[in-house]
Image (cartoon, rainbow, N blue to C red):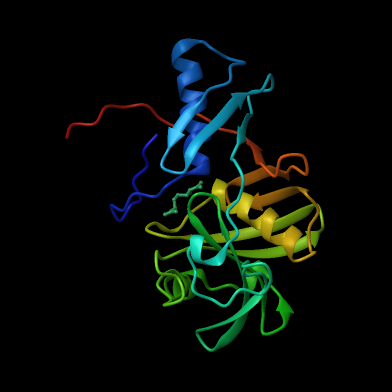
Length: 224
Ligand SMILES: N[C@@H](CCC[C@H](N)C(=O)O)C(=O)O
């Protein structure tokens, strides 16, 4: 699978994209209930079509070593950047850095207060995070409001794409960051503007599993 952001850049992985790819392939081949292996720039991913039509994806093991994400923020413990302070647009934000193959900055608080999604001005804040000097490969940024340790709401500014309705790798990054910050449990529902995803960070093998829908929205042909 290769993915192209709307600015023409090529990311390593796309969580929404891999659910759509698996569902579309199953529709074309009539292989409902199958499991696939998909090569991506972030490695081999394994989506599976569940009996209820949802797609569950083994998204692999998150990368937490700061320089490998990559971020240049000082590590807080064991090389990880967890709830590190970052000044952006005149506020102090806590940032946890997670790579799901692609880089994510997960933000749970601003100026010491928990994030309220309705207070986030994404179009003005997003580019300042995406292009911040601490993120040498630019970054996807997720702002997270915690309802309880198993349920959050998020909004996202994507690297190379801006404000989007959903980000599968971002939802995975949120749960990993929330566990590391002691805010979330390992199974968590993430409400995105486009709908919910269920995320689990396994204790057995440290893989992250994402479960969510993929629906046909249109069909057509492209005339290059
Ligand atoms: N913009 C991202 C790639 C796309 C992520 C996607 N929306 C998802 O669902 O994971 C990047 O440049 O890393």
